[in-house]
Amino acid sequence: MNPKLCWLDVRAAGDAKRAVVEEAVHHRFDAVVAADPADLAGLPPTVTRVLVPAGERLPDDLGPADLVLLGPGTTVDTGRHPGVRFGERHDVTDRASLERACDAVRGDGVTLLSFADPTNIPMEIVLAAGDRSAGTIVTAAAGVDDAVVQLSVLERGPDGVMLTAPRPGDPTRLAGLVRAPSPKLDLVTMTVTGIRHVGTGERACVDTCALLRPDEGILVGSWARALMLCVSETHPLPYMPTRPFRVNAGAIMSYTLADGEHTRYLSELSAGDSVLAVGADGRTRKVTVGRVKIETRPLLAIDATAPDGGPVNLIVQDDWHVRVLGPGGAVLNTTELGAGDEILGHLPGRERHVGYPIDELCHEL
Image 1: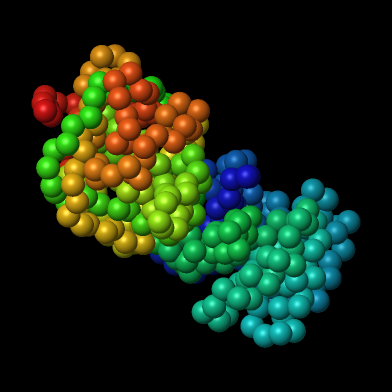
Image 2 (image 1 turned 180 degrees about the horizontal axis):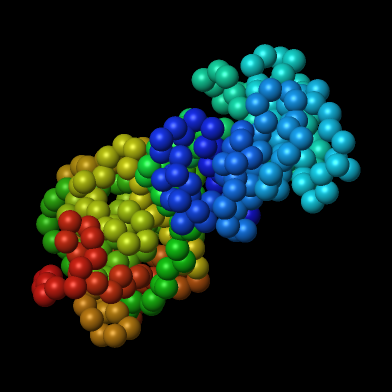
C-alpha cells in the first residue's frame, strides 16, 4: 500500500501560518495549499505547491504553483501555464455536488474533496466511485482526529488528507500517526523447559475490534524483557464456537506490547486502547481493544529459555484451549507443552518503567 499523502492548508492558519508551514516541511508533508501565490514562495522542492484560487477566476500570475485546483465549471487555457498541473476541487453538499465529485474521481487527475455533513456516507460513495482509478483523492479534515478517521473509511480511505485549520503541533501529530509504520519484529524461538500448575488467579482475555488471523496473536510475558506469542482464538475448539477477535492472553500482571516500543500491563488495558497484533512472520499491526475480560481461573506457568539462555516465563489460564504459536505458525495447546517444545517470542531488549524502555538496573524473578 502506498503511503498516505499529508497536505497542509494555510488559508485559515492566521498568525500560526509560518510556524505550521515550517513544522510541515520538517515532517516532509507532501503539499502546502494556499489561495495566494505569495504564500507558496520559498517552499523547498520537496513540497508540492498547491494553489486554490479564491472565487472562480484564475489569477493571471500563478506564482510558483506546481498544481492548481479548479472549482466546478472553471475553465483554463493550460497552454498559458506550461509546467503547471491542474486538478479539481469539489465541496460535497448535496446530491448534485456528490455526483460531480464521483465523476471527477473516476479520472486520472488530482481531486480535493470537502464534505459538509457530519457523516462518512458521501465519502464512502465517492471512494467507491473512484475505486481502481488512476487519480489521486485528497480529503479535507478539520483536525488530526478527523484525518485519521477519514483515512480508514471503506478500509483504504482516500489517498491523502489535508489539514484545513492547522495549529502548531498538528503537523507533527498527523505525521506521527500517518507515517509511522507498524514495525516488523524479530521473533525468536524459545525452548520450553517445563510447565507448572500455580494455583488460582485472575487472567485477562483481550477482545479486539479486529478479526485476527490464524497465525496472529499478541505478545505476552511475565517479564518485559521476554514475551511469548499467544495465538488468537481463530482455531476450532470443542464445545464452543471460535472467537477470532480474542486472545486468551495471560495473568493480569503480564506485559504486552501496545506498539513497537511501549508495554502495557494486561490489567491496564480497556476499551479504546490499542495493542500490537503480531503474526508468526513478525509482521505487526495496531488493533483496537474492544474490552478486556478479567476472570478468576486456574493458572499454568510456562517456563522456557531464550536463544541467549535467559529465562522466560508466561502465566496463562490452565486449560487445554489456551494456545501459543510455535515456529511456522504451529498452534500449541499450553497444557500439552513439554521440555524441548519450541514457542515463538520476542526479546524487547531493554528494561521498562511505566511502559517506556529505559536503561537501568532491573531484576525480574
